[in-house]
Image 1 (cartoon, rainbow, N blue to C red):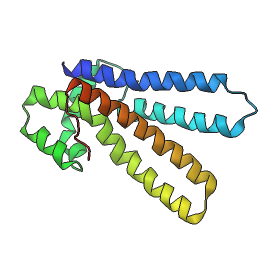
Image 2 (image 1 turned 90 degrees about the vertical axis):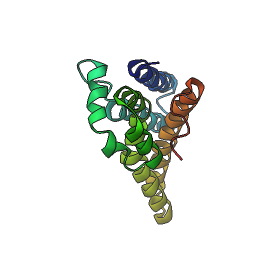
Image 3 (image 1 turned 135 degrees about the vertical axis):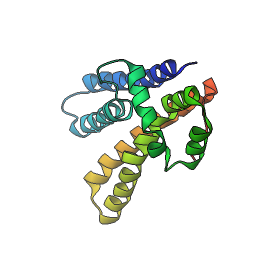
Length: 164
């Protein structure tokens, strides 16, 4: 499997989750404000995975996007020693596959998950119920994406068990 196929498969996972979430939002009664808000937050997180993690909406070829990510590999993987070691030991072609398989999750974990989890704990400690509610949804949504990506990588035998 090449880097473009990996990128497409992982993107498709998020697009499917996004679509399912949109359908749930359309189906829920507008009077159910809290439930609608929860689904809207979840939808926003799937959108964030597409925009920030995958750079899905960029113009141009996906291969160009992946090559751009390749230039950032050491920086992005620096907080994940196991991945960084694999990246540094790989040839150029294998580095591109590794980037396609792991870069989006490494970026999302570093930029969003860690902060959301810290903020969630603070909100709970301070008794900020609404903020904790939103942060829990954000955290759970990202964890669901990571789990789906990991299941796919494991099934395909492509750089699985690299986070943790």
